[in-house]
Length: 546
Image (cartoon, rainbow, N blue to C red; front, side, top):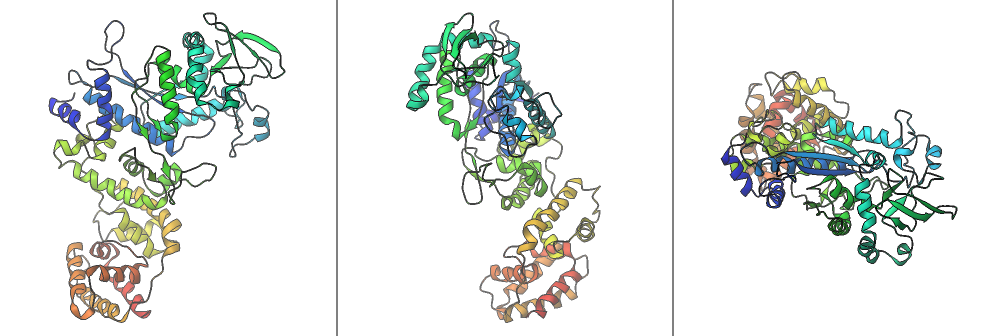
């Protein structure tokens, strides 16, 4: 149950999931009702093209939609209980196969089935009844892996079973009106062959892009020429035809009763046309958000064919699911660069926001990404969810610095042997989330950090300051707190005899001579983690290069 204070705060919150959810409140002021006036779930939808495998784009769309869904459960509450919702993951598996993917076996076999619906093509992996069934199973496993709450719906099953037949008849009844919407948006050459309805060839089983004549809308009869030029009259019902993409999208909205669907900027025009078609079919366009697409490190659009993106497996090898969700959370209407360099900060920023959560007033909690992420799939209110207010005992950035000093061949055991200096109970079993990040830091260091590290020789004034630091460290016990070590480093850097214009220059010298990097951690924390004696050895190595 939600208390009145939470509902009121959520309804006035500026956080984008609540802003999106309030669109649905305005659409359904008394909740969504059926013809008898009974309260029914608001339906959220995400779409999936099963010719390829799920990817980060799939994750972000389902996550963002889930965040709006959870927000609506609060702002749409009428009596304190969650407003009812459903999330449908819809697979467009009735589409014809246009191109054989590069990463599948039996490519020659698939070439022979080009044009046929994905659900009527053999599975090249040999594990499922069809290529679509295989990829649909991968989608469900992918969504299950991250704990999403959804209902899977297959386009092929809906078409083949006749569940879409009533909607198909409506499309045939409004054929001319739909053509009137679509034809002005097409090039002249495309207009000559365009049809809202794509018949399935009785001879080859291919989905045909040919002009269609409506013979009897109520009976579902259409007429067209097949590949051989023969004049064919057949039903458009029961899986013998499918709809052109934009018409299909609109039909689905109306047939399923979709209330909310977000999509990428590249589908903006499609959304406009599908919305107009939905109105022709007697429905309404769902509420939704048009989000920006991911960019690569150079600010260019990510393309699977270019291979300039970052896979979700790569992110999870270097970071965590929470950090990916955190990186995706901010303003969906702004483009985000997606490359390995953004991962370390995303990890540490997520944990900072999560730590703050328990101490923030309610209004600030509702704007905290961790609040939304913690209740996205668990259902608990963010500040009360397990783990809210937890902190990471060692930052990911500090783990990377430790791994960088240890080198590309650093091991998990080495990392934990140094963590003992910082954590009295340093043990993977006692800190499972830290254990995951230790392993991630080792992989990230091996792939991105270690190859770039180069410790330079200190300048004369830097060498003098390093000697002073070494002498001071020699007098301290091994368990000196990080803050005391940080104060010591500050004091040495501020001494005028060493000639540092700013403390930034001093810390830069420490990073470049001891760690081999232009950036680094709080040195007090690093020394406490790495150990005073080990740090003194780093200083000795640096002075040997002077």
